[in-house]
Length: 194
Image (tube, rainbow, N blue to C red):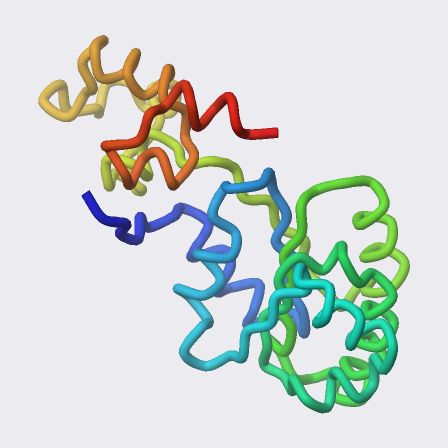
């Protein structure tokens, strides 16, 4: 089975954040779908640059102003933790156009160093959101369904997952790659997740 996009519960919050902040920072564990989500929601109207390749990273570090000129807003900067000094220059750009929302979309794996850089550079300028692996509600397309403890009397018994489905989901995990591709060797994938 090929990959397909799985709608995420965070989409609505992400759009709202982009309409109210100049920048949005999306953190979360590796392989949770950060890049896929940003590209799905903002990719048609935004540029995209991954800062993971060493040559791109070197360009951003060597000439940050030139790098931002070559990659104008709106833009998705993926893996911002590889070029944390770029955040000061993004702040400078945001301050030139403070009323423009949705200028920069940044992804990064959650770590204390990145959080510190974002807090120092983009305080008040960026919405900080965290994306977790796919939930069962997302996997089964039930984004608006209440959780069991929210309104147990209103849940439709026909829509409840069987104990077998719950167990399979638990063993597989909620990483988008595993949810979308059913032919993966799940134990092998998990053992390679370093």
